[in-house]
Amino acid sequence: MTETPRGPWLSSGLEHPSPALYFDYVDPGSYLLSRLLKDLEVHWRGFEIRVPPDRPVDPGEQSWADYQADTAEYAEALGLALHPPSQVPWTRKAHELTAHAEERDCSEAMRGALFRAHFLEGLDIGRIDVLVSIGSSQGLDPSETKAALDVDRWAGQVESDRALALEDRIVGVPTLVMGTRRLEGLRSMNEIRDWIASHHPDTTKEPWRDINERRP
Image (cartoon, rainbow, N blue to C red; front, side, top):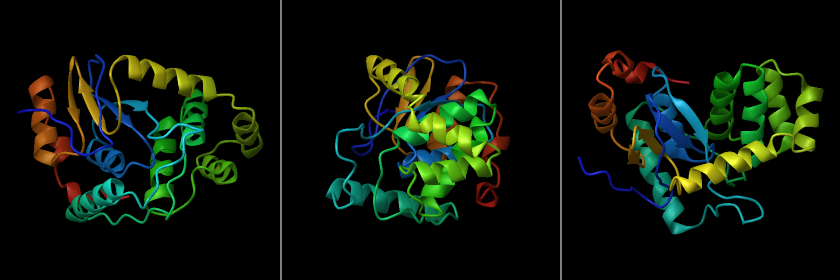
């Protein structure tokens, strides 16, 4: 299979024994891949689409609007309905919250909560008060979370992770990486399954069964 980018929000990779997924919380392709891969061991790698102080994504950009339409159609085929907010916020603080949650062993639940907040609940995950509330729903102390976000405690880690990704030729999301090869952009379930199976002989068919039953 020829591995070519699909759309302007896609990318590149590193070496891992299990798949690594470069993602951003406002990227619909990243959210859909998170649903498709939820039963597999995945190395999550945050990668901001837009970095402050660059302006956030303009929802009116034609390329973004086309991408949103394509992913909405894909989501509908999976039985998912996306309801993102009208604006596309920066995600620096959302990734900082994920790093904060990882220190407290709840990063997996936090990723799911952040994706749901943006795509299903239409919340502004660029706002610290919204993030504190999301963190609290996952068991994090609100005062501690707000303090960490207010003082940019995890900003250095988020910036460092992005710099390392750029060194390895990651330029966008979603990008799935395994070994020295990568699969860029949102692909069909069959393409993803076959690509992973070709790089990971021990992968079973179980994670791909009854996809429509696995809804948020």
